[in-house]
Figure 1 (cartoon, rainbow, N blue to C red):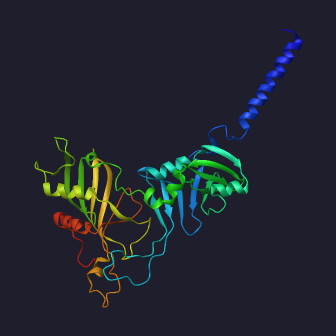
Figure 2: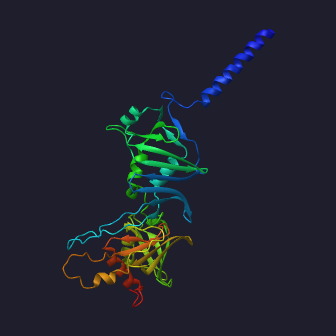
Figure 3: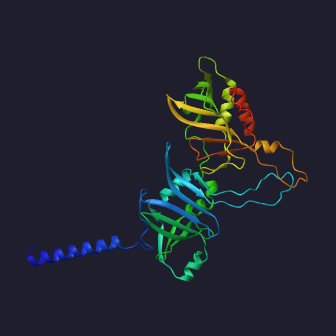
Length: 359
């Protein structure tokens, strides 16, 4: 090859590299498929905050405890009904404070969805007429993402009728993106979609020893747990030193293990009646290692509920219920009303009745 040919080939190669570099650097357009809105990793992500433009917000932060990494969900509070309620009204509408709760798998997926935040398509910068047609001109819903000390804010609008993707507009550069509608729906229903309502991350069949303690931490009973040989759900609770299963204790425990919160209170939140009185603690082990625990308690407002009802019947009596907390909750949870009888049954069964005068 001549010297001139070598020069020509070199120039062509440089032009090719320059074109490749410019293509790599160029922002994706309508024809380029997925677009990166925020190019970060989970380590970079610090906080995601959703605001509806009124008084409601949802904030996600990274959390970690003995059970591992998770997402903390902070929900804004709301005002309850302060006027008199009709006699026999089933709902007591009280003020709900701002609450910090443990997020579930949906909250964790949302956290991962923002690191990196990808869009199905980038629509680029659109004019006011187009923003209006997409519902971005009047939306009050905002998402604020904080990462590496940087805060970026976006307006978000739901999909149009029949659509499957939400519209996201960056408030700093005006670019509009099509993103997963999960972002819009899950943040709007965070109270039900993002809050972890489990007491444990392990299943009923995954422990082999149960210790029952009273509210003071004194051991009252120790059981070995064995699965049913025929594969039925549940299993046998065999007291230490015995060969026979305690059927009454096993049936009671299966109902306790299946309890579901009626209301999840926030981290550090004390129920309206005051700090509950713990009547027993259940501790779970597998091969000598503790898997978790559950505190069962009575709410202090039970005394108020037993007092004579006010005359006139215009006020609703205080709400009462059993309370519980575990290694997986951020604080107390309120149980359904029928759980009170179950807690009382356990107190009698294991001799863990709350001290006289405590309630």
